[in-house]
Image (cartoon, rainbow, N blue to C red; front, side, top):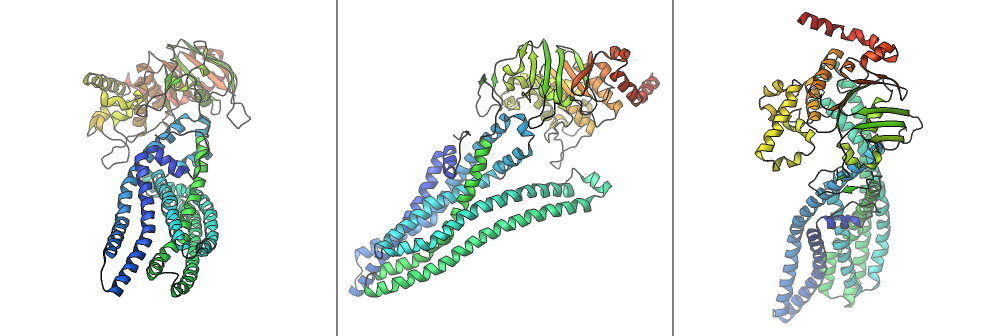
Length: 628
């Protein structure tokens, strides 16, 4: 089984990686290629012996046993050559399926273990895309070219050259001397082609994204209303042209290399034929070996000047790919000392030291800046949270609210000061265990193009176990799902859908149903409620709603999560009165704290912000008075 390790990968891993994934099938396809190479070499001898024997039989006017034997052997070799590639294709597909599955799984686990700051780094994203993009095709190409070069071409060329050297010792040396420059250019070109393809990939992703905007369903309303097709089309065309030019550049390098190989083929063919004819006349070559070598000569020279040069080109490309693979494998990972690994079918995280039941969580003099920057986002930050209470963290944009959540949830651990869970430092707990302590709904919450049930029940954290559920367990899960949906006033909407909770959401399928923005938000919140985490966090998920709708949704969420510790993050204050305690952030510090009434009485930053925003909620107040 393939395991991604931090080491230097090279062109030999074109074979070693598939072998680790599927040993038997990789050996089988290797033997198929090698046996085909030997068959081609043996064919030269078999055809020569058959022709010499046949000519001798004609001279004697008698057809002897030796002629029949060599004829049968020639036919067997020819038959194997015809079916061998079909046999090899069967094993090759098995290798690629296993390799793609295992290497993709290892790459996914690697990404899951990366330090969080790397996931926000565009360079890391580009590197990851080069590794995982079209992985199945990449593995197939590199394995095929590796085997073609080392198991097929080189043994075949070596065998025929050895046969030829038995008659003219210096002729193989001449052929090698003429083809070495082609090999050199092939290796050099392979590196340049990979770099050009890598550059083109960036522009390809951009123009494909813009093409989706121009033609996809997600943007159809705004595309029609705003009439931006012409502008986006120009940008699409620019990105498409850049990708086309780079792809053309790589293709021209490949073609130029092939032309050099073809030209060398012509020179070699003429040289070898001119050398062999006098040898035939002098009797140094039999008619059979002359005809046999001559018929295999073009294939041999094509192998040396064309096919082998292309294989070397691919090996050079693979070497560049393996450099990227080495860089990917070397990316820094989260380090947890107390971790018990799980099997491939388990979730990507692992469980080690268990968290005790929450009593308090305290930030004590925490200072933090993002890696690679010199600006402190939080400075000497302190606050304390207690179990079962509702908190609001407010402040203007840029005050440090989202950064606080990233530290609270353990996404970043590179800080000064202490974050204490029941008095124990956060960094003493395994990250995977710490993550289970939080259930979050972010501003950019995910919209999964799955069924409603799957969208909500993903919050349980392990959908893979549903197949093992008993009927009673399933009933309890579905009951809990419906209770969360009812509490957030989304159950009736879902029930009215054609397939109820089995209805697929989004725009992926023809029978999918897309929800409104507010309905998607309620589904995301229901998903958070399905998680038994100690903390429920709403990080401005309703920022796209008007203040009145936001306030009502927070009120509903607060009511059904009343027995749990909740944190509302917002720069709008309509929901803060629902909280037991409010922290006001400014310039990376807690400037004020207390209940809504206490902060209003102190007439500070919070009171000023609230009075500024109070007019946003007048309609809500008037609407409720009219209802009464």
